[in-house]
Figure 1 (cartoon, chains in turn purple, red):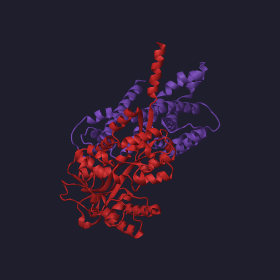
Figure 2: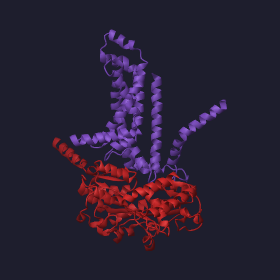
Figure 3: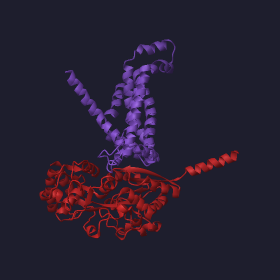
Length: 258
Length: 341
């Protein structure tokens, strides 16, 4: 039985990680066309560092991910705290609405945003498709994820703590700053990390909201498929995988220190 | 001192306000040196966005992109359609003196008579490819897919409706723009038979990978995809246009109707027609250049390669894919039936 379990674990890990391993291996392959292993090389990493075009796309991706995550984390946290702390009419409706961006297919979100931006562009001359519209698009779905994660953290919180703070004379903001926030921040951090990674690899919504000069990495990789993905892209993917793994390790270490 | 600083910052902001050229192109289709040369010469910045399918490009332009992008790279059969939809503008030939560098057959191409709306960028053919280390004879017929007698080994057909139905029509001796329901029905039967013998349908790059990996022995392929690998790392690959004929295609370059930087766009088109620039593009992509004046600057293994520049007797048998109008529904139906068998 135990052996079977071990075997199952191995198969599962292989299933999850082999595709990633293949990308990393191909980034060191001398062959430009990838079908055969023709030797080890760091050439593609060198080429990547001098390919300012691809670096620009990577930079666009990072910029969108960082800015949209910051906005969505603030808005999402406020939303969750608001729902948790206050009673108001239509509260349950709002709670339900939170799930909508999570379950609506990306493609519907993307098309809706495209039409929405086009409509506003006609009325106001603003909202030209660009990095800004991509960021707005990402924030719309990130808020829901952040709010849901923060909400679940809040649910495990003793409401008595806030009442105690109020008893001791803390006002609304002070209570949030010194009591609620320190208690829920792992939830906020988890929400932010999730929002960040969702933004970084989002394709569908980005596709519909991108304009000139705002090609992101997923858009570029998708466009390369037909003409053959170059090993430079594999090298970049390997770097991204290493960077996100490192971020996860640091994040875990930070959480455990608390 | 203050004044000097002010002047400096003014200068800096002037330098920042470089003209921008927004190019909408296939991924990895223009070498970076060429782009940098243009940026340097015209003190401009080139922004490149990429598309993976012409349908996506068309959708983006129709959704207002024709006022955002300056230059687009549509396939031949899209040019007239885009002109009809008012997405690209009629070109002012007085701003394109380098048009004279084009080969005679590209001065008046069938897909855009008189180069009224576009200039040609790169061209190539569709045919068959094999590994001469595995298949020890020269192949010259679509029969490798469509006739059991000519079968040589595991094969792949392209997953492109017009190309693949076109190949079957060519094998039967018809035009690849044939709209006769009877002829298309014959093509369908051939394709269903081929599908059973072959490993299936695949995109150009995937089929090539399977050929390189040895899974397939003969594939339906684009010339440039094969020549690129042949020159760089697999010299035993071979490419040929079958004796029954094949497809010729040209990617064109056009200026959007509401291009924000139209003057710079004209400079860019004219620049692409310069002999050395056109040669650098072809050397990078391993596709043929329509710029006759560029041929002396091509790498020798491209210049004298009949797979890239087919000899006149082969050129005669090549056909452009044309808009077939309403008959496209017939094509769609047949393609669905073939794919679902």
